[in-house]
Amino acid sequence: MMRVTVLRATLACVLGFSMVDCAAAQQRSLGNFGDWTAMMDATNPKKKLCYVGTTPKKAEGKYASRGDVHLLVTHRPAEKVRGEISITTGYDYREGKDVDIDIDGKAFKLFTRGDNAWARDASADRAIVAAMKAGRQMVVRGTSSRGTLTTDTYSLSGFSAALAAIDKACQ
Image (cartoon, rainbow, N blue to C red; front, side):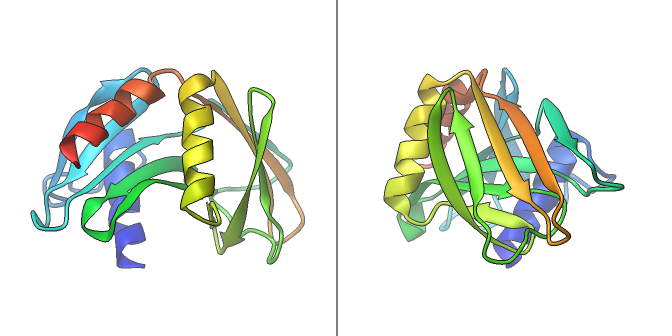
């Protein structure tokens, strides 16, 4: 849970969601690439953490309010994790209800817990990342705990370049 909190604080800082003290987060920008930002966590040099993040270009749904929404792809080499997909949706997902992803006609599903969604395994992460690298846009559909359907549309412009930056930084 701490890792998710650090990632959220850092992404909030980078994407301008809040007044988080960016220097205190000990994050290093690897650059902005199209609609994506690449970052490296310098908190623990023995456990490098790199990720790319973005926010939706379009968010649809009949909701009164919603928290921060973002998509991350993370590398944690010390844990042998590469290309882990995670989505934070700004509301709690309906328990037991998967998130549907469409990347230029290719369909994927993520499991949910609280306000986060992930691929079921590393193989699914790899397939989604491959589709993202080849794709132009990613549409994410989820259902809140109250039954509200949301549709978030993400641009994939710059994704491949941002991913290459974290591939290099977190070998």
